[in-house]
Length: 86
Image (cartoon, rainbow, N blue to C red; front, side, top):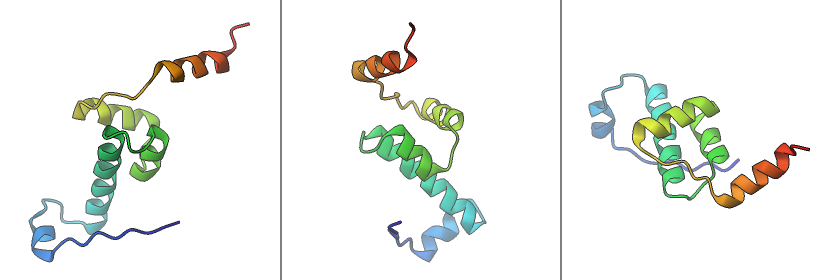
């Protein structure tokens, strides 16, 4: 697993209204996941892995942020083929 670090100055961290550093990390990972998904840089599955959220929590987060789900006609065709209604 690759690690990418982001440096945040101490004066910025102390102004974040969350006292627990692990909670700040978790929130930043979620926001990064939503941002990258919104920009169509990653899939929902990858975004969910980054965020640590369940499918339903992620979908709820998309809705709260006004981010549209990326679902193409090609995705629908694949889903219908997978469902195999025969």
